[in-house]
Image (cartoon, rainbow, N blue to C red; front, top):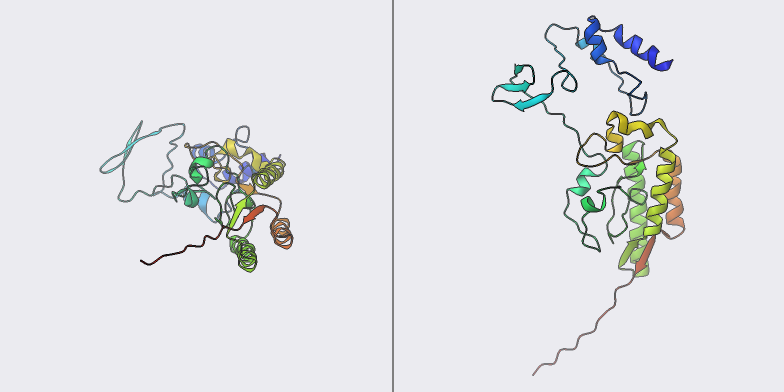
Length: 255
């Protein structure tokens, strides 16, 4: 099996058999390729060095606290000059949720995305008029600078339409958001990434305890995604409802 072949090759690079067991996954509870595998240069070999020690804080000795001199686990006190905290991040949504922007119903993005991070092509969110997002949730797994460029083109074409036609407001349609979210989830379910919640994958937001796992990424391919953006713009942005605000005339009487 592929999993057995990979673990065998991993263990060959670690001198200590017990340490090798700690460093290799058990594919019974860790589905292979359920999240993007790292491609390393010397990572496993680094644990053969005398000045490197691996501590299993998940099963053997969980963290208890950060002390004045280092870290305390259930078994030991470790002294350090520097501690690097790699505690996870909110992929695709974290920066957007940090803004206290409220939509039509008073909800913030953080509140709207509590259960599901729904979006339309990663560029706009139902309930949040005149708000563009760039590579937001359910944007593709692709080269990000290229995706950002394609998002910027879509956004600029939308703004051009509004300026050209004298439109003031666009409202992302709930139906369009549901359709894109469902399509993204359908594709995601056909990939091994759908097992990402079992391996705490950041690609499903499963690396955090404050929210449940969810579909965050469009795995239909960059070309299909870019085609969807182009089709939307060519058809006049059917995902959006455009409005013109009324103009009020005022008369001022001088006495």
